[in-house]
Length: 405
Image 1: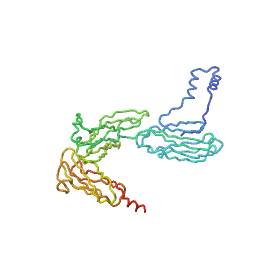
Image 2: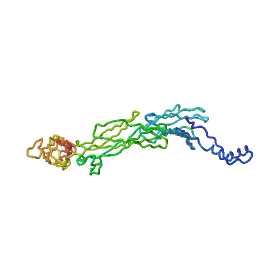
Image 3: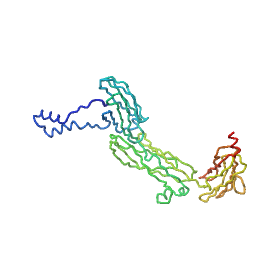
Image 4: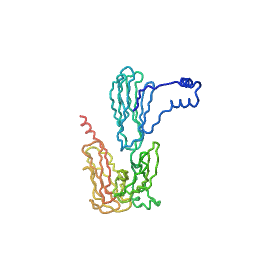
């Protein structure tokens, strides 16, 4: 704990030289003079946490440097500063502000009598990831000479274990990618999407624990496999913290899956109850396409009896056959029928299917009447195909005049 308001003694350099010369009976030895001046100017350096003061004509302050802080050991960092009133008048704290919601400030007393002191305690939520953090508390007092006082905590937060990057995105997997296995991709095959990516498992240790925790035996029951390196790389960071890095290869197993977004959570256990967590994300592309991809029925008047018509072609990318089991039109005003001779669902297997849409304008509604038709198929990669549709509505002049009345 540092006393921020302790007055600093000042001695002029000429006066110091004169005292040395008087006590040594003449001019001071250059070596002794250099040693003594050095003792006055060089601050004491302490490893780990430290305090430092700063002062300007209108403000005073103090900085507490906590050094490296491990979130698992210290989720909340607390430090207390002392405010001493060395004046002959009472000192009042008028206002307190701090930099973020991650900090709590507790002030012992907002009115400090002459010669008394009070404590200001800062509690900081340490982030779980690696990074430098600085939080600031600012006080406004009624001291006419130095009304502003600032108190700052600096720290470097460390996790015990992390994966960099924490998310691996494989992009969109197409039918072409599914036909290329891992060996072909590793040998330089023409896969449009890389099925293998590299990440790093990083483990951090204090300077006095120079031994990396070993990974435990584990298995994954999913379409994602990982290969963890056996020997980690060792780094010593500037603050003395030890970092061990294991290479991690993540392989996405090719396979036929329904078209949607996929998220897989991977957990790798280590000694000391440590878990390295990774998230793998990719999108599975479908094997069916629609032309057009959406239907625009144009414009109609509200309550118009003229039926709007449209047509959509659903086809397979690879030329495989499929059936359309049914269609949810998205509104009773929209009817969807197959374009083949049968005129009903489910359709016969084919590479291409025609769908006929008929829309009856509603009797009332907003300016835009829209929805989405869901086409259900027996294709394993595209069990559903969605077709948005829309119609712009306008009111008849008689309807507008009645609405105005």
